[in-house]
Length: 254
Image (cartoon, rainbow, N blue to C red; front, top):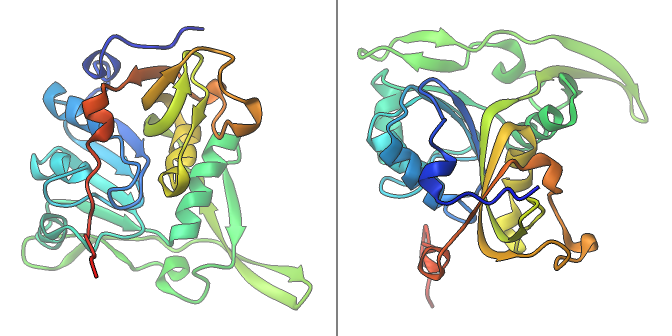
């Protein structure tokens, strides 16, 4: 039951090239930066990342991107990373843009054993009809486009409405960051750093959590646990310096 690893490097050692990663965080808030750094040093490449966004040019998933380690990205927002835009538009990176709520539900469904679900989001757009550019060539031509998805009509309180079928996401590995965690893998996230972390933990076949404060089993109030340890296979305790290294994507002052 003791899931604590000796180091971040040990925790990510078996992530192989070609793996799919579900990564928690929103912008730079709640990102597993230590695990990302360890994976950068580890050398795995040709990776597919599932995350709300791809960090910024010099931090978060942007570090893997800058090292040309990402093959494909499933995300809902990518507007703060210039290198991301350059790689996408030049045909070096495949990108599946997904509505934010749909992305969250695809991850949650994957962790719940639900293979697919219907949602109203995207009906009547290229999200449902297909044709969104996933990959360009170096001349700006679309070489891979999103396929059309099944649309079905359901009865609702407002009458019959169309809904589009979306497939769940299950990743090979989940990488998350928690405020507090115990040796059994029970996790507590703090404030807005909760964001996509519980969903990334759920949909990873092997989930690795870096925790700012490691506590002993029984110290966490069960009512406060956001992610039960059943979803977490490995825990990495951060040093005080690692826990304090939290960067701000856009600093705003008065």
